[in-house]
Image 1 (tube, helix red, strand yellow):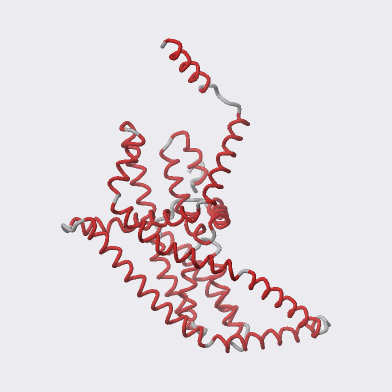
Image 2 (cartoon, rainbow, N blue to C red):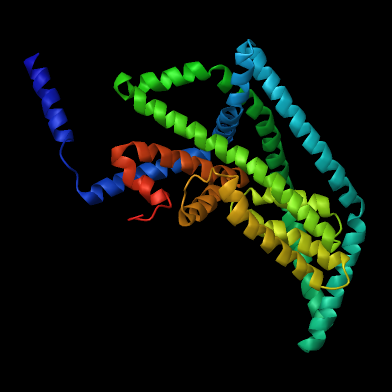
Length: 365
């Protein structure tokens, strides 16, 4: 018995030895690589669960409201999900009706776009003293190459669409189960970290709930306001399909930093194709710059009080990194995930330097 105790004491004394910095950083990088690899490999499992957790956090106050009205937990969750389904169904019907109007005019848009391309070719040939036939030949070769690439990607596209449908089916199931087993999950987390850390764990969970609820609900309100501003601005300019372009622009704007670039490109292209003057594309660009200024300086600070206090450098890096890891869902999830990590770091003493690095509070402020 004494020999066993001595061995245990030797083991813990060996593990208490402070490792050199290069050993610690190597272990950290290896661990980080392993985590990223696991997240990439298991993305089809992890992404629906993460979406389910965040949606469940947002819907939790509604479920609690119905439970306080003496409704059973199962019926409260069912009614909440049904109301959310009706909301999404109404929005989908509205968006589909607008897109159908756009699709009816798609052949005419293609014809106008082709005419614009031919006009641009003739202008470039005359201005740069080039042979129009060579330009057309290069465009045809490029078009053939793109068609071949597109044909090769058809299978991958079908797989992606199938995965998206599976994702849409799994998320409501996860949301229902997470909301139903919420007391069990919270009790598990508290027991996992022990009674002595009960207060700190409860505080972290409360802060995470607050951050996610404010961030996602704020994004919805922001998207509605931006969609209205986009649509009104495009209607004033007389741009065709103003409403659908305004709504799509607001949805793309939800993707941090990169979505806004795509959002302004679509109406500029429509303006170039449908209007006689290229100045309308410039007007659209100016309009979206003004809306972005209003969004960044008024809407986001006031309505999306969520703002999780993540600095701009970290935000850009994580959006690109999660985009490479999980695609568009990763770009959407990047900011709230980093916000959760920051909340955890801010409440654990050894991790507070990382919380400072992620935040936007300058030293001395």
